[in-house]
Each structure stands twice: as C-alpha cells, then as structure tokens.
Length: 415
Image (cartoon, rainbow, N blue to C red; front, top):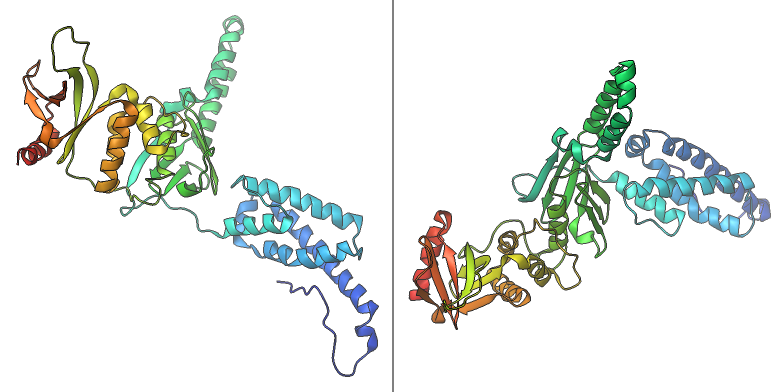
C-alpha cells in the first residue's frame, strides 16, 4: 500500500535548502497527483469488471489506498497544485461508479468520495451471511420455486404474446420458436428469481439460488424502510442493506412481521423462543348473556391466563397490530391473524405480555375479565364452554391441543 503524507516535514540540521523550499512542495504535489492517477486507473478497471464484487473482496487494498490519497489530493487541488483536467474527470468517474456499486448493497450513501469508499470497503470486508442455525429460532421462512412462476410478470407477458400470435401459429404451424422462448423464460426465472428467505428476531436473510446471500438487520430498518406488493409476492426492505424478496407466497405476512419485530417491544427484547407458557389460546365467540333478541355471536380469540381471561375480535387484527406497534404503523395484510399476533406476543416476558394484552383489548374493543369475577354458564352447543361476567360472555371451542393448559389455568382460577 502506498503511504502518502499530506505535508513534508521540515528537515533539521544541515542539508540542501531546495529540499525544504517551494520545489519540494511542487514535487510532493506531483507525486500525490501521479499516485492518485495510478490508483484511480486500477480501481476503475476493477469496479467496471462484471466480477467487481469478487475482485474487490479478494483485494480491498485499492479502496483503502484511494481513501488515504483523498485528503492530500483535496488539499493540493484546493491550492491549485497539479489539478489536471484528466485527473479531475477520472476522480469524478470513480465517485459516480463507487456510489453505483454501493447502492447495490444499501441506499445509504456518503456525502464525499472518502465516505463512499469507506462504506464500500466495510461492506465488502464483511463475511458472507449464513442461514440461521439451531441456536437462532426462525419466525418465518419461505422458498420460491417453479410453483410461484405465475406471480412473475414475465409469465403474463409471455402469455399475452402467445395469445396475440395464436393466428400466426395456426396458419404457419411453427410453434418451435414460441416453445423455445417459453422454455428460456422458465429457465431464466428458475436461475435468477428463485431462492429462500429466513426471518429471525434479529435479521432478514435472502439466499438466491445463484448469487450472494444478503441480510439486513431489523434494528436498522426505519419507519418507511418496508414496502410490499403482495399481489406480486414482493417485499423490499431498506436498512443497513437493501434487500428484495421476490415471488414469495407469504409476502404480506413477511412485511408485517418485519415491521412488528423491528420496533419496541419486540426489537432487542426477544430471541425467537416463547417465554409465556401459562396461557391458552382458543377460538371463541362473544355474545350477551341474555338470549332475548341477541345479535349474532362475534368470532374471535380467547386468551386465558392465570389472572384473567380476554377476548379479541377476529376482524380487528389491524387494531391489535397497531396496539402492539403504535398508531403510526403500516396496516397489516389480511393473513396476519389475531391468533398469530398472540403467538408472537408470547415471545415477550410475562409482565410485558400482560401489559400488551390489555392494550390489545382496549385497541380492538375486546373484553377482559379478572379471574375472581369469571363464572361459567350453559353453552349453546356441545363441545363448547361458556365464560363471562358483567352481562357479556364468550363461548370457547374445546381444543384437544390446549386442553391441558386450559384445565391448569381454570383450576388456578378456582383456587
């Protein structure tokens, strides 16, 4: 690596006066300009290559050298020493190309060429992300394969071309070009548009079938860093990295869960493992205890805890979501159910779970009864259990998977 000093220190003792005079400064300025021109030429050659990421990962020395040359070069240019038009054009081309290469990883660029080169060097020096292991629980994962080819716009374009050229195929009887084009499109989709994603409590990772894996830290995602097109199966995330998951069958769910776990109370407080065990979540219906002229029962979810029972309306999933994330959060997609949100609330601590459950009840217009006021009553149908108080009750649907937890909680109520 070239070592560049922005100034020449004066010599002490005897020596030639020309070494400390104006000629030494001019000579040093010319050296800086010559080193910069050589460095820029090599760096531009590497960054213009189709294999630029591989080349720069194998040798980040040119990036570091260009950064070291920035300060003395700017100083010389500011004093008008050796700033040739060719070098200025070369430096401008390098800055434009460096910003373009950095945008491949993140939209957070830099104010100066020094900052852009520094961030690019930092990104390329990081180890490649690895899929979650056994010590990192996965909240959601999905795989994109050929079964999602119908969500690709190229499929619809090809279908439109095939329909509009049907007359030519029937008249001239040459379907081979169209079949070849269709096969080429399917092969392109399989090689370039398929892959796999993982969402954990800390990061979102996308592994394409061919290419480099990309991950983004959930803590680095801002309020407007998530955009989704569920109809096309696309989720775009902007954080410390730029990441796009395409043709995902759970695009809406993925976008909502990323938004949920990037902020309080989930961000930095959960590890993906349930921490609330004394809870039973059952399908339920809310209705007044009086059967005369009663409105239809409202479907929802019953949450039973040792100290209380709560009812959350099933159609108020958006209000429950905003009760957890705040009023300014984006509206979740329809596949974000109340049951799913309750399951993710179980990742919190028990005190935090109870606090958030009360907030969810208030936000959704649900019901909450304390254990000492709950009483049972006759259910309208067999296989159901009726609980309630204060003139409002709910019927729980018996669930074999939740039977043990339900019995344990109800016994604690009686005690």
